Image 1: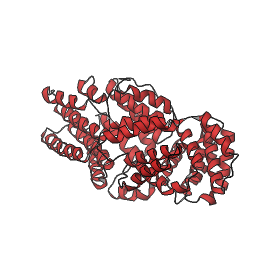
Image 2 (image 1 turned 120 degrees about the vertical axis):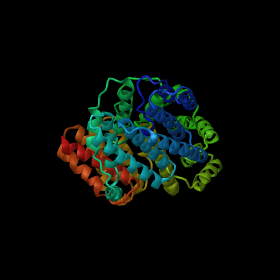
Image 3 (image 1 turned 90 degrees about the horizontal axis):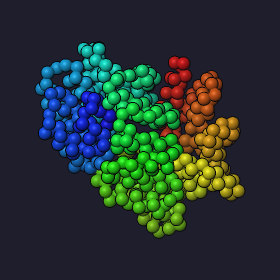
Image 4 (image 1 turned 45 degrees about the vertical axis):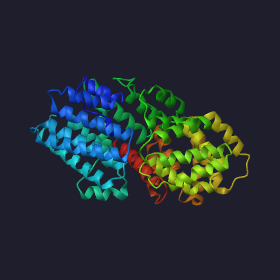
Length: 459
């Protein structure tokens, strides 16, 4: 979502149209009423295309947007050189890197990112007083500083370096009286806080709080922070009829165990979408809905379709692939417990936990139950009891060598120690996360542990 945050000029009506997902109207307005700032017009036209493709993708649309993007770069190149030219070109290339990555064009994404990085560094050197350089550089610091260790050498080879805490501190201190820039910066900080730092506080947006973009991003944040009902409320207020809206609405019902309603929205997403993202996960979830409803034949039909889909560019679809590979070994009630926790339905989670504690479970299933009980207690602020369960998970790590339970237990113990001001203990737990050599979420958990260690080191 970082790629759809625009450095539009204050009070730009085109930006307001984009922020409300009215992409075609924004493009038409820019064509009919060009401003006296060609850099802004180029940027906003590109932003409308990029945002539209990110939210409603298709292969044909990708090629169309790519062609328009290349023409805008040519137009920008022909304009006089100044601080805005390099800034806008760098931002456009950064946006394209996200789009290319999401559509499976990894090498294209890498070169676009590298080009944007170099333009930003040159602009800082040539125009050191141009304050928007600072924010773009902060985003690069965060992105490149979060690259997993096993891929860091590639970026270093091409001179791409970053420092997460430097980037975060820069954004924290970035202030402007212009509402659009402040709005964007707040969105960026919120997304980083939730997705990288796993914090749950959401600051009020100072500009356009009821715009579709604001409502949609906050819905994603609510889903990430175990507040499915709040996410649903926000999504219901989004006026644009985007396929991805149906997908996330389905997620809120699925986590609530309202499976019939979830099925309706998942099917609506499949009927509306023209792209590949989330399809593998959607068929998996449809299969699970039927499985939880004890409709085994219907479940296998959807699960077979999920297995047939090869495209898995998004993290969601990659996770779906992992689950499909192991679904035959999965205890279904434990799976229900996981989803209840994800959605923030803690009373239901407690009821499921009580029932599971009375069941005969295999040693591995007992470890998973301990892990879920640790998460439940942590999410309900019972840290002492959570720590007891996490220690049980860690003690039985040999039973689950390639599971994420033990490394995430260390990560969450580190977080709880940090909250309690026990810095030395927190560092020890974070370092143990990095010691694990192989598990399904290694890149993600390692990045979070590295950021946490960097944060503690700078305190």
